[in-house]
Image 1 (cartoon, rainbow, N blue to C red):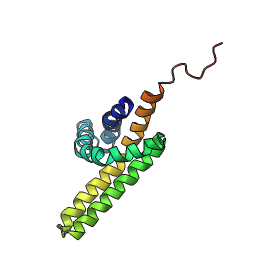
Image 2: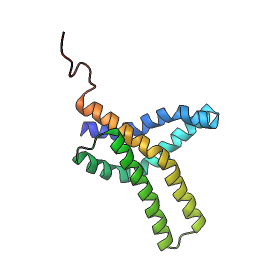
Image 3: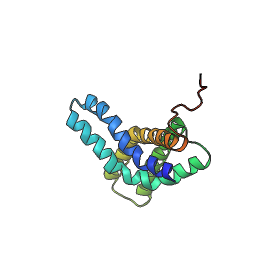
Image 4: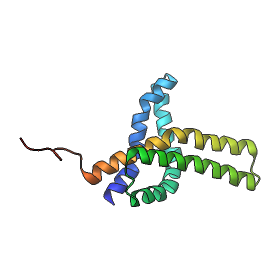
Length: 141
């Protein structure tokens, strides 16, 4: 449980720290890079917790703690979530322009940050659960 909670809450923040240099390079501004990283945690955090917890529990129940597998699963979950949002918006007759804008934000930013957070979750979870590999598996000489 400690590994799960540590990875669950650590992944978005570690992902934000990792994304700052890339966002700063793309925008040409370090403060904008920090704003994008902060927005990713504040904007995507609730969706990550709402949809990520069941998906992560499902994945870990099947021993899928590999960061690459979790990144792919996070991306698939994010795309599914954006598609379901559009379907619900269409069924209930929401404003088309607003619905597409929201779906693009969820899908667009989410396609960047969801795999990053999934991979970070896998890295953190594996390190907490199975140790940091310091001296493990080495033959003493």
